[in-house]
Amino acid sequence: MVAAASVSKVAAKGNWLVLMIIAHARFFVCCTQVIGLAALCAFTACDREAGPPATPGAAAPPPADQLRIGEKAYEAHCAQCHYAGEGGANVPPLANSPVLLGPPAATFKVILQGQANQSVVNGQKFNGIMPAMDYLTDEEIASVTAYLRHRFAAKEETITPAQVAEARRNLPVSP
Ligand code: HEC
Image 1 (cartoon, rainbow, N blue to C red):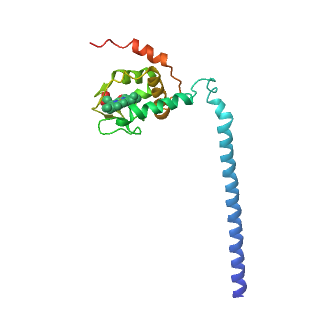
Image 2: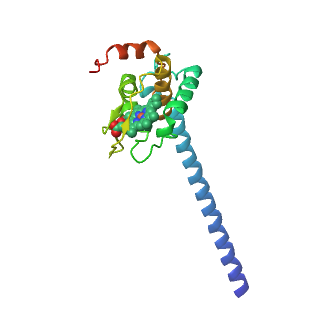
Image 3: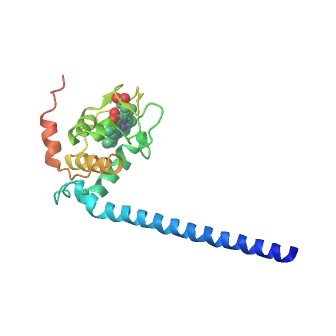
């Protein structure tokens, strides 16, 4: 009797376990269906709701040539102070730089005229002096600007030397 009772207890426990497994499996199937639906939504219908796709040609990364020239100019003329972009004691980091996040002309201005004690990046004020580097060519300034905006500000734009030439013409005449 005792043995039979414990056997049936075990059997009952076994049934319970089977039920639990089934319940969990159903729950799992249900979850995967929900996740699947969400994924489907993300890739199809919801995407369409977010608006039309970007116009072709807009926001294309700068051409490889421009990025290469820009990186070379950065290494030659900027990295001695800005390092790999992290900056230093009085040199601001380039990620989240309001200048790079602004229009290309804002970066031209800093390169052509220099800047002192004005940078505020990530809420931190910097008191350094960046010298004017107007001796760089229009192509170097265009390329380094496109390269840095691509690398640190997720701004995808080809920048022409003509844009820099125009910025030079509009600079205030130095005393
Ligand atoms: C001699 C050191 C030095 C060199 C070389 C230098 N910088 Fe700077 N840069 C600085 C300092 C210091 C500041 C911050 C100036 C300030 O506080 O107003 C700065 C600021 C900037 C900023 C503005 C950041 C912001 O949002 O306020 C940009 C963009 C920048 N530099 C890009 C460049 C580029 C591009 C080059 C190379 C063509 C370059 N720098 C070369 C020292 C330097």
